[in-house]
Image (tube, rainbow, N blue to C red; front, side):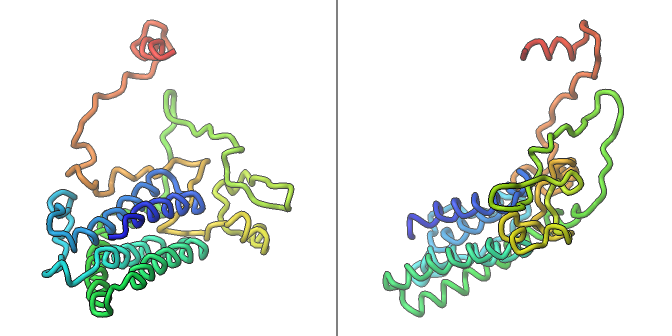
Length: 265
């Protein structure tokens, strides 16, 4: 296996998260599935590596090579990764999909130049696609799609959460080489007629309205309020590790909440 491969993919994913302006939950989901694909691809050619089915919730048994010498671990992993990311990044910006394609082609090309035979290339590609397809089906069943575009109204009242993110945290829109601004009515920089200039598309990268798989983080709203409905990766249920209820909100200086606050001040 090319030892650079996992590091290069990890670095590429960090870039995707930044450019796509993903919220931490969505970024973590992307990273988890991407790294699962890499591991599964490498493990398919290395019998000594532990299989992930049984370790990750609802993951099906993933295929492995009958003869480890008949496939190349790097090529299997790259193909599986490409299949998974092509699905998860289908709403991504064109520059993002181009970056992923270049990295995959570069890593595969390096193995070909290292002398991997045509037969091994073909067998690795077939195995990687099988693994990738199973992982895509697994990802599609985690509940993420069902939480897209669902309206959420935060509860109100004393002691309830209020979004106080300042405007300087909103996604900026580029006007010129020396000036940017934030639109208070468009904190995530969603595509609108006012920001669809050539410069705006290149410099500010507005996200398409209604993007389902790669929504930009909206600093003016609640972040993934239905995340508890998604299937966890390791825990059987999101509440498998119960925590005590927080202390009741109170203004009184003799209250438990006040005393807890004082311990961290």
